[in-house]
Length: 330
Image (cartoon, rainbow, N blue to C red; front, side, top):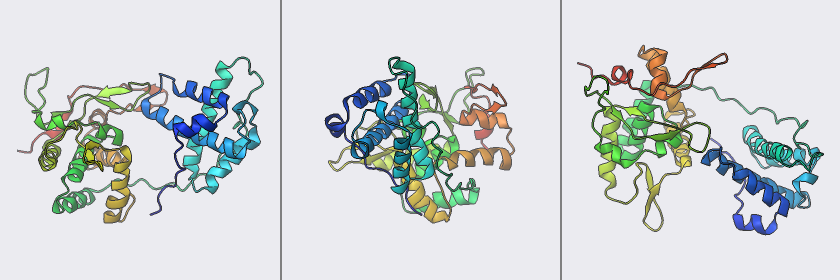
């Protein structure tokens, strides 16, 4: 399974020493926008640094105001020739296009400037992989494999991501303190439930703060988290999923580690393409198709904003369906 190719990162030092002054200025303004999430801004910065490295090397380090459609097409072809997928190329192109629109909106003196990608055809679509959720047997195979190896961190990840349907960035925010949580108490009835509620986690959403919500999980995830907690031992890092650095310190895992586990381990074990988001669709499929829960229960667990035509249904933040999902079998 071929790894996705990437352009090498560009350092702040190189960017400040070599890139055209106006390009530096407008890039900084663009990535200082406060209404965008930290992850989006991080991506924008990386993409723009790479674009202006290309401009430096191939377009005489011109100001972006002097670039034309042919330069945009040249950049797109450069990305494809360097092994980036059409989707990755579109992502980098979209960032530069957004910067162009920013200039058109806020730099009133540059009325002649136009988005350099207007009229430049998008690259052909890449192969679309069929999204096939894991079966319960496939999930059990993964859990059994890493349980036998005593890799409790991966076992904990598998159970938590499966039971919550959390995205990879949401999973990495989970704090170690959850192993000390008790069952969630229903605020309306005052009764103890059969499931746990996490601390607030920044979920996917617009803006720097995104949408903060809690995630619900049952005994199997909690047992796995506790086993990993005990096997890990004491350290100063507050997050659940971590790695050791070369100097012996413990730090929060990067999102790409979950991608690595999926492509390197899970995909090879099952003989099929596995990626972090697949666990989300797997959980939804199992709940609705295999276990017979209604869409509303799955929607509440996953924190979806489902849409129907132009209407957007607001996510229900309560826990009224969680007792049904995690109820112990008598």
